[in-house]
Image (tube, rainbow, N blue to C red):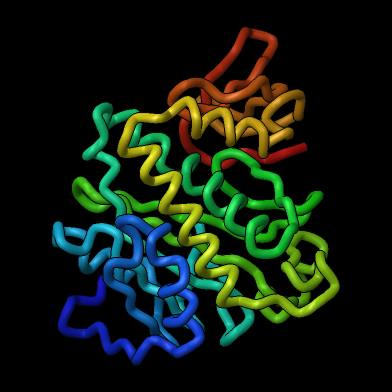
Length: 271
């Protein structure tokens, strides 16, 4: 359920967040013009969706210390305990690009690039991307992105695992965190501002139609997009093939016995 403007119930931005945002303010361009912080909320994406129709809320950022109803793609629950991860949503308008349809299709690709670059800038860790936008270290998921279309806007949410407490213990063989990978404590605020700044940079690319720059960066961060065995389900049944890149609109290309197929949406299993 979307939360209306009157029910924002946001608290004052914690000082450490406010100082860090102030330090990199010039790098944020459109993002962060409005910044709402919540000690706990249902879902930052739901709050953002309630404001997506308001033009002045383009670039507004909603960040929560904890979520009680966080979710990922295809309705999956995103575990969001207090202080253990980053839970952020923003409102984008890629349709303002010179090529609105292509820009909208490439929004999650651009976001994946920005998020990976921001993590590296903040921590030195270099995660890889899996189509369309998940961040991985080896075979374990570090962060996820959820993009939801609301009219001519896209509500873009992301969650990054900071500590092991950010995911249930039963997911230990499939999930990881920054602290796990680096073996030290992580400055969560620095990760927040660096991912936001990198996302702002890639959003600028999207609005300016610099699609090749986005795609080239994504390909460099996504080795699994070439030569990996994958499976997916179509109306005609299960399919398998070998990845052979992405096209100019961000579709995953898969070589099968019948030729090359484009996957533009849906669930892909990496074999």
